[in-house]
Amino acid sequence: MKRTSKNIEYLEDTEELVRFAKALGHPTRIKILNYLENRSCCFTGDLVEVIPLAQSTISQHLKELKDAGLIQGEVNPPKIKYCINKKNWEKAKVLFQTFFDK
Amino acid sequence: MKRTSKNIEYLEDTEELVRFAKALGHPTRIKILNYLENRSCCFTGDLVEVIPLAQSTISQHLKELKDAGLIQGEVNPPKIKYCINKKNWEKAKVLFQTFFDK
DNA sequence: TAAGTATATCGCAAATGTACGATTGATATT
DNA sequence: AATATCAATCGTACATTTGCGATATACTTA
Image (cartoon, rainbow over all chains, first blue to last red; front, side, top):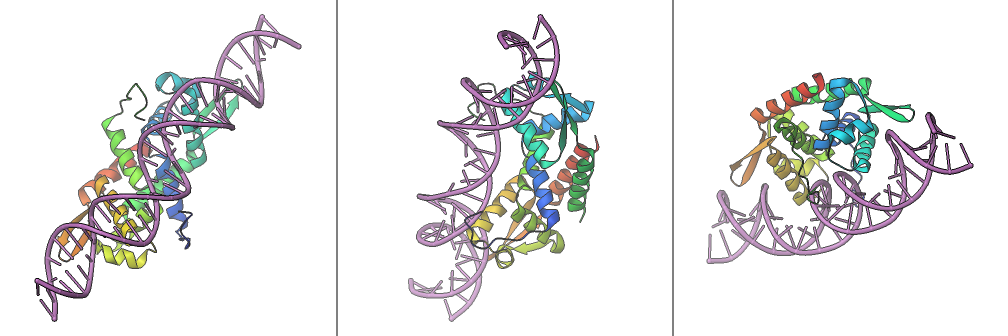
């Protein structure tokens, strides 16, 4: 991508849709989101128990979901509580809906 | 992924959602799909004119969209006509809808 | 202040994704 | 048969993603 001389321009909505799609493009992250949907919030530790991956790996996936805007974390010492970011969740929902309905 | 001894199991729907999400995870592919949505069908050559990337690169993106099941190609010598795969399109739409609605 | 707990970040290795030019294959035209 | 056209595939380079263990950070509790 960076090697291309011509830097392609994409629509704002396209960029955003891609950001969400990328975040959804890994089964572990879907699992995390499904888990969150069911109980609205959870701690990192809960996920480590449920998903057979290293704690660092899960933390990384959480970071990506956070960067994509799909979840948010609030410090709740000594733990961190993660929740769905409802505003962006709705945004993503509409973007995908619109994309498939066109 | 393959280095992990424990091979994680995921739900069938999760695997499918991930496959679609991955395919949507690149702006060029979104652009191709948007283009197809507007005129229902097109040739590879049309895309090469519209998108400033090498023919081989576009062909590769088309392959990925086809592998994901979102488009289908019918030979129309000497060209190949690509269309949205409507059945899978609907499937993807429902999967994303269900995912976000839960 | 020392030790414990929960989580993030670092550094690395392997796998996957993205892009290109060159080549190949298949069909149509001369 | 020779040439032209369209698109897929190959080989390669570089970037990004995914995973791990080790370490760092931040806050609590003893």
